[in-house]
Amino acid sequence: MANENLNTAANVSAGKPKTTGAIYIADVGTALPTTANAALNEAFSCVGYISDAGVTNSNTRTSETVQAWGKVDVLTTQTERKDVFGFKMIEVLNVAVLKAVHGADNVSGTLADGITVNVNADELEYHSWIIDQILTNGVLFRTVIPSAKITELADIVYNDSEPIGYDVKITAVEDSVGNFHYEYYKSA
Image (cartoon, rainbow, N blue to C red):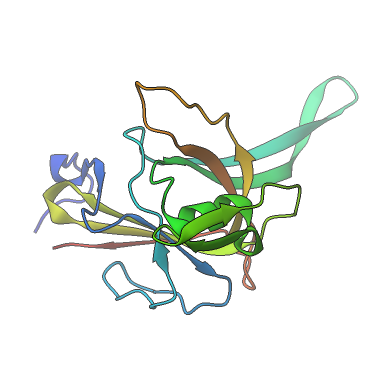
């Protein structure tokens, strides 16, 4: 029997995107998967290729320490909790990407017929997001974010040496049971 108190190199892993798609978006309320390998609801749209920087997750807590007379720490309280994911979508001709960045009501048409994007100050919608990865040794890793919206959009660069892309941060909000996101792992 293996001793779980020992270092195990097989537990060290790196994440790669699934070649068929790694990040998906759907309206909040769409049925969400509860395993790493469950089929996605047809309502989810793939946002396509992500830049080689991959995905970051800033899963942060901020706290404040209260001191008593004499400068003795007596209490630490959590003052803020954020769950933010960052990535750069580089399929700028993908209608799902354009709707995520500009709002569904501000994008119309198809590439074949012509796409129109209205760029304005409308509040963006919350969406459900799925991030699928394959870890070392073929382990499936799925992150399910029930509700998040784009809260930051970096400068959009147009030049001839890099792909145009939407470098975004999405901020998750708690679901009905108080969770920001779910992580599912499954060996191959």
